[in-house]
Image (cartoon, rainbow, N blue to C red; front, top):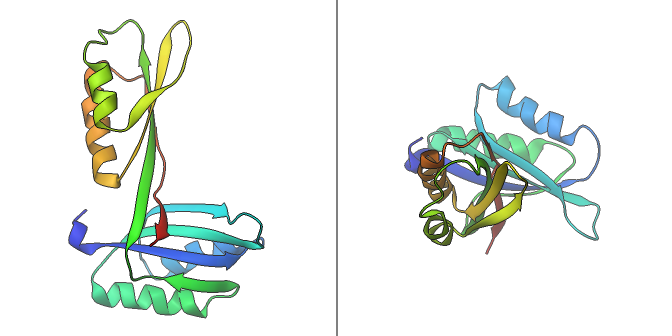
Length: 157
């Protein structure tokens, strides 16, 4: 995806059933793609934050934000500004592979060992989207058994 066309949107919604369905329906009904979508309640409030990563030109982005503003029970749409954005990756690697250099990789990508058992290590890394992509590519040398990548979470400055 071209970073120039990558768009971040943070939406504050009333925490009630059906809201996520309406938001995703808005995108699918107009043929817009959602590259990443995460939702979490805002502590000690009746609201949730929906973090959306999408792509498109200025016209598409304008249409998306206009339509979001019309949806109820949306409280606030934040489409401009400086966001702190992070993603998370979990990578399961077998203990039977050569783990040489793993410590250096983890230090480079804000990573650590999240868990282990007698057969596998679960590695966790949290960073921006581009670096998580690089982390996953780097981890391929350790023959991962499984990889899980979260969607973006963001908070405006």
